Image (cartoon, rainbow, N blue to C red; front, top):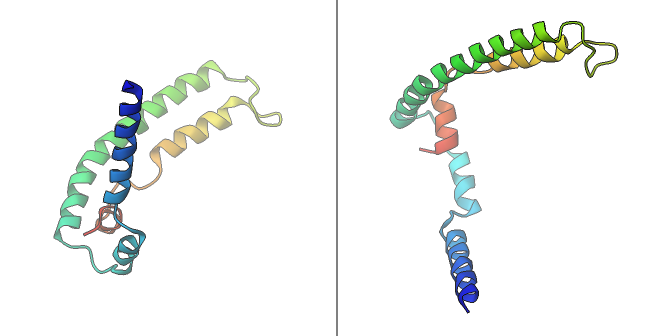
Length: 115
C-alpha cells in the first residue's frame, strides 16, 4: 500500500513539473527578440567572467602540468594512432584545455538566461 502512495506522489510531482515549464512558443518568442543585451546581461557577463577566468586558468595550468608529466612518463610509447605516440593525444588534450572563450559575453548571457 505504501508503494502505491509513493508512485502516485511521484506521478503527481512529474505532471506538475511538466505543467509548470514554459511552452515552446514562449521559447520561440524569446529567441525572436534578439535586441541589444540589457543591463542585467552586462552585469551577468561581468559576474560570470569574474568566476570563469580563474576556474579556466586553474584548469588550463593543471592540465598543462599533468600532460607534461604524462608525456614524460610515456615518451616513446606507441599510442592509439597508426605508428604514433601518446604525445600527440596528450598534446591535443593540453591544447584544448586552454583554448576557447575566456570571457562570457553579454549576448551569451542574454541568449542563455534571457532578459
